[in-house]
Image 1 (cartoon, rainbow, N blue to C red):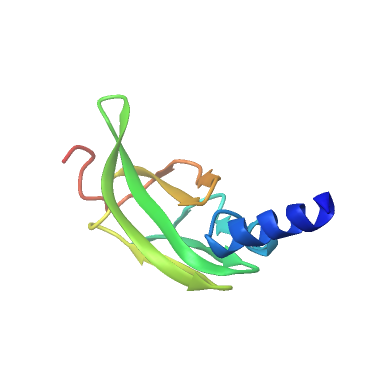
Image 2 (image 1 turned 120 degrees about the vertical axis):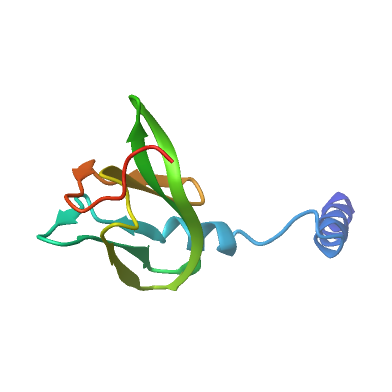
Length: 124
């Protein structure tokens, strides 16, 4: 009788949306945030890649600039990736000394800082 009551209670919690399947948590564990370790600094541009591997979702990311010894947000965006990576590049639209920060769920990554030879300054 207790077993039937326990099953009924679990079913009631699930129906109320208080208990959900563990599959969604497992899917997030198989997902990897991808971000270049280094920013490529070419003759007239900087370039890096970012995205998701093994899943789909929105990645929040920032281009950060070092201004007076502090890292500040130069620009930010949220981009949807479906098991893919994308390459970003620019020149004067990014700061002189920069890094990229990306976050997906609990995963956070930074590129190594890089000098942008054609950068648009450091402090906004």
